[in-house]
Amino acid sequence: MRNLLFLCLILGLTLGLLTGCNTSARTAGEDTPAQNPPTLSLANAQTLPAALRIPLSRQHGYLFVNGQVNGKRAGLMLFDTGSTLTIVDRGVANRMNLPEDGEGRTVGVAGTASFGFRRVDSMAIAGLDLGIERVASLSMYKLTRGFRMNPGGLIGFTALSDYPFTIDYQRSEIVLYRPDAFTPPPNAPRFRLHSFRGLPAVIATLGGGQEVLLIIDTGADNALTLPDQCAQMPGVLGVSTTGRGVSHGVGGNVHTVQGYLKHLDIFGLRLNGLPVTFEPPPTGLTSNQYPVGRIGGDLIESFRLTYDMRHRAIWAQFVPDSSDQ
Image 1 (cartoon, rainbow, N blue to C red):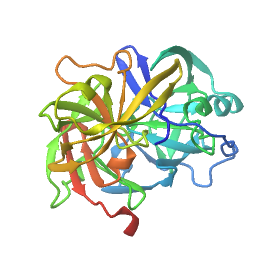
Image 2: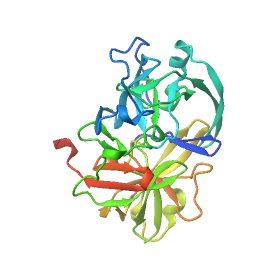
Image 3: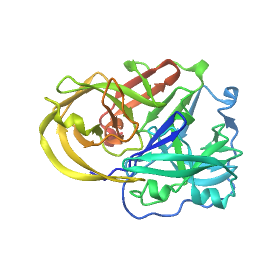
């Protein structure tokens, strides 16, 4: 299992999560004019069709989408439901001379670091203007060292969360729905969607009967991460822990333990023998009611998930044979 980078980005009451790993990087695309300037905008729902398909690129277990800043190509953007922030790589922001607009602070697994905000005239993905005027500016290389590229930025969950949308790993696309035209997917069960620090989360049950709150994090490449306290709960592990590793964060590193769950009840299914990483919970990522963990791409890709944050609903269709579709 690849090492994980796990960060909390705190802006006032906003907290975002980012994940990644460790190899060499490649430069993002040149800042050239986009061939198709944005004609659709989230700031004006009437410009949207009933359902808008946004193509994705799947690389190294992650989802990417073509990004444009101020009408210019900004390279591939990581689509990360584990982050509340939308980010433009610091190098891209400097080349585009994006004006500085305040500062923020990241809280990671072992410390903190500062970052800046930049103003933008437009921020778009695949020709869709997100209606964003202010973005965070960070070094994407530091956040995504596991990629063999340097993404141009990151699209956080809150960029789309005002609209119902489906993430479909098998078809490599997001389908964004105009709210007045949205109908739930047929034959897909509905579950309660929780909002934890602005991030999508669901309640799941471990083998010992312990309920946990799991953030749905497309920016994580593993199946499941839980706080280390869960490893000591009775009935959680199917076998004893199998290995050790390290989670890398902007503030430093923490040691992790790997194992296999006895089972996990989630989205109406019982999943046996799921691989799990246990690590100390990041500062501020705790709940008085539940242990807080996250599910990553290795598990999410087995479901076609439709989010409706306004109505706190999520529909989950089990589609396990991703390699055959």
